[in-house]
Image (cartoon, rainbow, N blue to C red; front, side, top):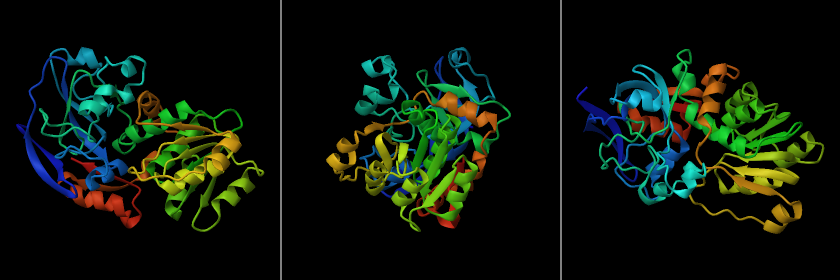
Length: 358
């Protein structure tokens, strides 16, 4: 392969297929043949231009594939060989700033200064161009964090590594204690995988709050003990009923809407904890800080990206404990990228997780 095809968002609301030269590697670099890449809510924000993206950009950060080419020392550097199944962490940390040195490489200073997130904030004008998973090939520099995926893991499970890693990180930051009841707000892919991570971490009960019968039913298969459709009943009242009038010990907000972030504070018990995973696209959230937080002495945590979550996610996926592959409902070829994006955005045909196969 001398040339590489990729889907490019070249301006707000406009996507096209472009061709790029295949990169020439330095000693510690490698190339990954992208086998599958999930479509995330963040990709929809990027398409709409919610965050001032550096267009043109190759989107896609939920990618998995096989090692196609290695620089002279890349196998030793990254611990992989040709043909290995791999996931590459979406953040390319500098490793030198104070945040990286303290372990918070998801907050790397260089990310804000120049863009370090695959598929999110690196323009494809930056050589060697291939910094997104909506591409046949992904460029992996020496500072990338590469994880090998066991050979027995099928692609439809492997492709959920990055979003599961997001939820694993969140659960690491606010872990359930013995006997805790966990409420998860939002039954999209991140909400479903948060239920998985919370249950795997030992939550006594997981209550999933969302909409759409098919998603809530799948949530029951993925670790949720109870589900609440907030369009059919009052979620707050039902949650109090399920928790003996206390509320949830721990609430994960994954829906990424201002209303969900506000409601999540009401669902937590006095002295409880709320963790925001969802991104609102910078829409403002109005919170009554006295009644909703201070008078309840709530603890509020946010969780950003997936640092330190990948290996836990891969181990959980490889265990086969939860049938997460059922989340993958739609597949599209690279040339159908815009159609795939619309399918995910509009939740067409009961779509849950839409993937591209470049």
